[in-house]
Amino acid sequence: MKKISRRDFIKVTAAGMGALAISTGLMGCSSDDDGNAPYQVTFSHGVASGDPLSDRVIIWTRALPDDAGAEVSVSWEVADDAGFTNLLHTGTTQTSAAQDFTVKVDVLNLQPGATYYYRFTANGATSPAGVTKTLPTVSPEQVKFAVFSCANYPAGHFNVYAEAALHDDLDAVIHLGDYIYEYGAGGYATEDAAAIGRTLPDDNANEILTLADYRKRYALYRSDANLQALHHKTPFITVWDDHEVADDTWKSGAKNHNEGEGEFEDRKIAALQAYFEWMPIRPVVDDNQEIIYRQFQFGDLVSLYMLDTRVLARDKQLDYLDYLDPVSGNFNAPQFSADVSDANRTLLGAEQRNWLQNAMAASNATWQVLGQQILMGRMLLPAELLTQLLDPDPNTILPAFAELANIKGRILMGDPSVTDAERARVETVLPYNLDAWDGYAAEREVLFETAKAMNKNLVALAGDTHNAWASDLKTLSGDHVGVEFATASVSSPGLETYLSLPDDATTIAQTELGVTTLVSDLQYLNVNQRGYLLTTFTADEARADWRFVDTVKSPTYQLAAARSVSYKTLPGQNDRKLIAV
Ligand SMILES: [Fe+2]
Image (cartoon, rainbow, N blue to C red; front, side, top):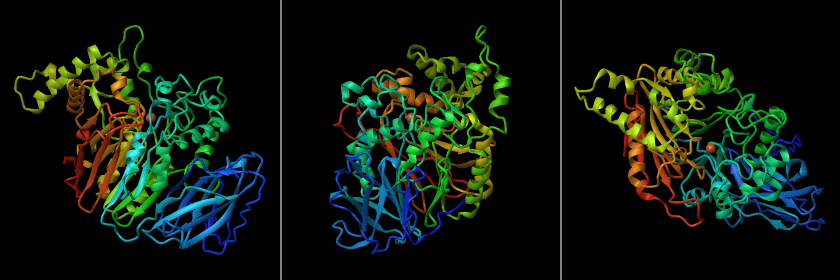
């Protein structure tokens, strides 16, 4: 992996990848902020920071002039006090329409584990101030992340971001993707948009395909006051999931990329360019927008590996419909089983996988944390539920869950009356989410065996499903190698919508109990609420606290405290399983 070289001058690349100004950032770079330029500048998309290291952090803003042809000179300041009386680093950079008037500066020569305040000025206008924090070099007593995924603007208010912005002790926000959604008006999860005042603007109301479309979609999302508040307060460490390009993206296509929408490659390049312009992410390789896997080190406590399971190398998802005979309904189990366990199927690709294995080998941190998109835990359900799960009807699937969970419960209790036929019904299982690691089982096993061989404490963070989950991570031979904590969505609808669950507490509780009973490695599921995940790492435990809001359909909400739960895992070879707190 190539590191960004140090430069003792300000570099402005206009290569259109979120032109990154790099500054050693000491005082003395003269400001040529021209207060008399013939245009007005606004900072209406706020500020952001991201990718903190022990000596540097990215700061971001958008300096939008009322003249689209303007070259805007933007000055920035970094101070160690909220009043900006003690300026430590200043500089000036340029932005223009070529980068959608976004500004990114990699501020170097910072102190480890320190809090900084930053802001921008242009042509007499001043941005809001942001707060950020560098990574520690000595081992901290704790590291705390707030973890998010799946923020869908037309589907709901970003109350989850608002709630998280109340924390004062976060080390970083980890965003696992679906930061935006690509759909147009009338697309997925837009049915409440008009009623809740979250419609798409007229000039961006279609499915987004071009660079201009993607840029406008980011501008819409970043106009949200709750998202801005969280960005202003905490540095983000982000990866994309599929909807930053299109639904179910893989390396050469996407389920939601169709004929008549142009070349997928062109769309992907546009989407990734807008991502690099709008997100406070540091390019990993100069002039390459496709590589985002990277490492963050929190002393000897946490090694955080951010992964790309989507764009770089993912093989196309398997589809159950390819294995079901449309006439007889018969399922070609041998062929499916051979394909899903094919050792060549990959999500990471050999280069990223080797990088991860080498980085884990070199790390002596207590916790090896994977910041990645999709569920890693084994989510196997009885095979007889397959056709029902492909097109769920609550009138039949809920009783089926209950009946099978009852059998499984009797087996777990050692009930001697369980028949062989009953046992076969619950022990003949299939993965139900082929877009997740379950569809790439051989590569998952390689990672689990790596963690086992190195005796590492693995903690996988996941998003993508819109529901909250906790699973034990086990090798095929049953050895615990770690745990998975998966966050609910910020606003996208979850399983309660997919399964058409009635909104009553008893049905919700029974469904959660049924699924967690049937899925052996699954310990916890919240099937119906929007929220985020707080993870706290100390020398003794990795803890997850899920926080849910009671609604996203109104800007006023309450924390649904009664439904928050906590799990923890302890370090050490034999104890890496989930414990309810
Ligand atoms: Fe999503």
